[in-house]
Length: 138
Image (cartoon, rainbow, N blue to C red):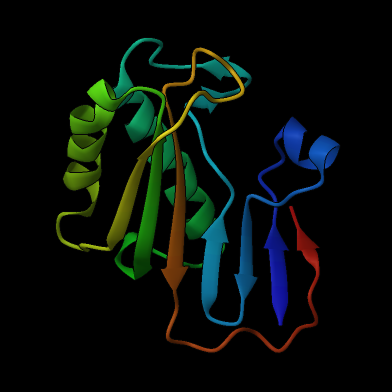
């Protein structure tokens, strides 16, 4: 069973993706950046952008029924290796008690040049999915 959860963001409809997809007990987020209401926040501050991006991902997971304690994997993409300590530190401040597996990768760039960080989060729920057929939830 697959359930898709949207956040109501403009890009999801335009580009045809969901913020979170639940496939059985696994939940995965789309890439999340520090864009809030169409505005990039924390410009020039990779730690602030990481905290905002993780917050967006965690809020989306919570709306799909998964708390931070269910997170099993994170991926962080940074546009400069010099940002790795700030971003990893932000990760540590959020996930120290959870300790998911994590990947941090340096990339050539992100879609908006103001974005320094993009993150993805995966969670696992031990309880079975609902019996309803797959549907888009916004």
